[in-house]
Length: 202
Image (tube, rainbow, N blue to C red; front, top):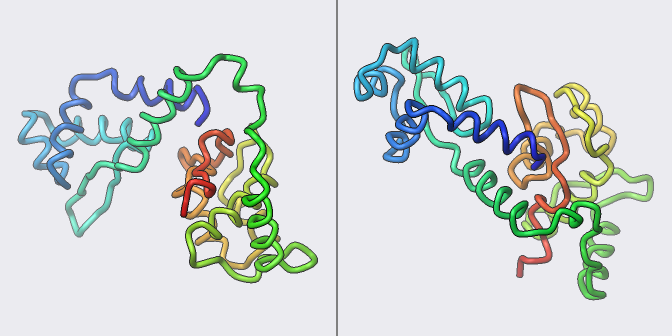
């Protein structure tokens, strides 16, 4: 996860009201109206602060008739926490280093999966059901995205469609497994050290 994303995350938390909102949402999903009542604030104020938290993917928002429900995004909370720990634990020069080479067993498995799931001209036959194989496929596709480039949703869909028709599923899987980061419908490739490693799976 890029450094500026971590900075924006901490900026979003630099407000007592937002911290209180997150503490309340840790108990479970709540409506904006209920949050307003518990915090003695107006619904408009809750909406303002929720927008700040949603911009950095700390909360989910859903609508049901006239009510707006908020809940924590536990996945991104965990990602932000691990990202900061990763940055603090490694030396500054580590950003320029490549990941350690895979051992021969992992390399053989990776090549086997790529042969079985991709055609000769690089098209994805189908999305693997097994998590380990799926991550290998996602990693292979993510490597083809330009690091540091911002993609609109339309551009990302077009990229995915070069390999498989189901761009919506693959786009969602990219986010779920931390290959991409999304902010206000703009997508960027995360640094490789943030990708979920398939080698750790049994």
